[in-house]
Image 1 (cartoon, helix red, strand yellow):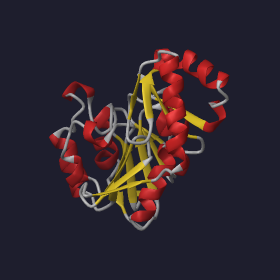
Image 2: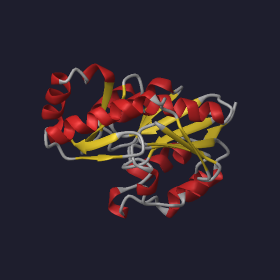
Image 3: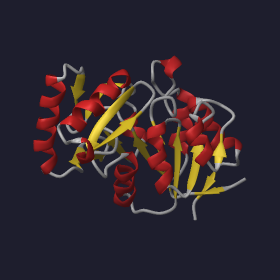
Image 4: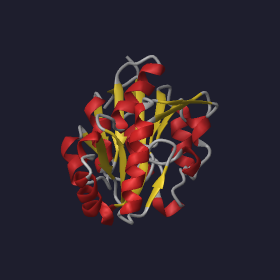
Length: 227
């Protein structure tokens, strides 16, 4: 089976990187990724400096970090914040509300991170202050991410794809916040450990988990050919 794609966007945690390797990318996965001719985009909710495997800068042609709000290119040398300046004031208000509610959180350069167990009280506090409609709250396995309404990982990945010349896009993911990647993709791949919501939308479901699933789709299915 040949899969036509010009670009591949993939999630980091529990997709290309495995938890049992300390969230690093295995050497086998790196070898496959470096061999394929397609442009590669990493899309992650992590801060750039929090990505455990620093080889990502030589493997991927572009990265969108903080859930698609920051674009990094040129082997990590060029960074572009994709969110407009109006977010700065709104973010200050959000921080004040979270502090007032004694909700634990962490601020990235753009987005706000928190523990998913605090999600109910977070929504209650934001609703009370009339801020709930001004933000988008995205979820992953362990936490939530607050960003401007209308923004998500897929939107950032689309900007990255266009910066690399555009074309037919494959997306590979595992979690709920990868649904937005699937929405912009021509070919949708769920690794074996993906959540049911993602598998339901997938064109291809890997038998194997994490990086082994990435290898599976790039090799066992006959590899990739460009248009």
